[in-house]
Length: 563
Image (cartoon, rainbow, N blue to C red):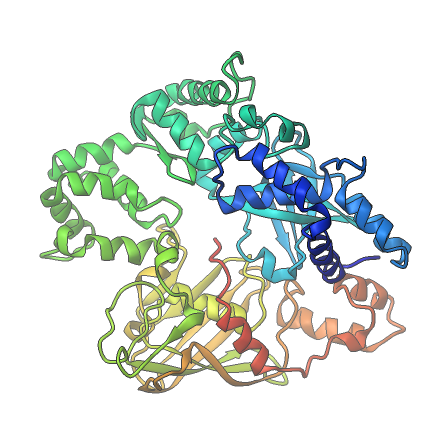
């Protein structure tokens, strides 16, 4: 069976073949039809290119992929079947419902069919995918699974309402639309165009309505989207998404169209508006809880608070001084930094990731203190040991002293080859930090730095990953020293042994796993090989450790934050 690596090689060869002079004239004609004004964004062009390779009927009566197979008679039969199978493209809006190992489960919003999906870049290609997000893109068959094909655009979970609307819209450049570009150009199949539809319908990008009216607002939006796609279309028949009772019961739901990221719904947003009109209301429980949720929920975009605060900066200063118990807080001076602390994901495009921080002699002494991965003049050398492991499993890392705990979590995920789809927590002398949860007493890990909870050598704290398997890690600060100019942080200095596979049952389950792999006669031996996707027990070496590989992955960026 063709695996994802070979599929990636075949796709690369196919694109090179399709872009050869042999097909240049036909592709140029297609581009001119799809983009009559001569302009196209990169994603739209890449979708068109993928459709040209797999679906577009050439003047010869074949597709490019059929011509490729015909021109390569020496290809093995399974590779020919795989290539020709790629003509059966599924292009839609999908919900990411699960991520496990080297694949994600994508559920088509149009028909609720589930597709186990791989990337031809392996796990690296799936790093941005996480449960609850929505993917706009194309997939093709690959063995018993599917594979991403062409560009994929991801929307946050808060864009659920608009994702369902998009699922009923004409996809970007389906084969039938390639010959009717004037109609396709009117279909708002991108988030930016959906945003235009929202503003066109409501005259603004944020409205506040009683909870029972949310369905009506979404229905008007769907109808506007359908109208933009086809001026002769009747009302949209897309079903409104099921909304939770707490939204429907709210006296005022903020409905916010985000440029390029769908529609977000904010329950009780009217209470936030009232508090910015009268800061004394923050003393009341419900307005205070609403404002705290708007600040601490990492999925809520910064603009939900920014637009209120910028209109009333003096009120904002009073509100956050009380919420944060920070006397003298000034929104004009500190507001943007506050949003970056609590919502770092929304600022990733204009900041370096933890894996690409490089200190130079010129910048090492004059770096600002902001964001999750800002370089600092010092680095912490830490030893991270997996609790209960015999023989010991550990990593010695150097990280910027100013790294946020949320980003340190991502570094640990890379260093131990975890998959980053379970809950996690730092247990420190200053408190417990992870995903904010008031009931559990978990504070926001994105809002605190390493050097604030463990500033000195010999300081210790714990990191727990996967509350089911309960992977405990002891973290010891061994040294704090000046950063070396020109060195990229974080980096792995050394370590010992491979980390256990995800979901194997904790440290005791891992011991059983090793026993089963070592015993070919064990009744569960073959099942364990299949579960680990191994051809032979020799393919998993528990003694293996490769610092260079860890550093390569760190240099490419740490995993996408989850949970």
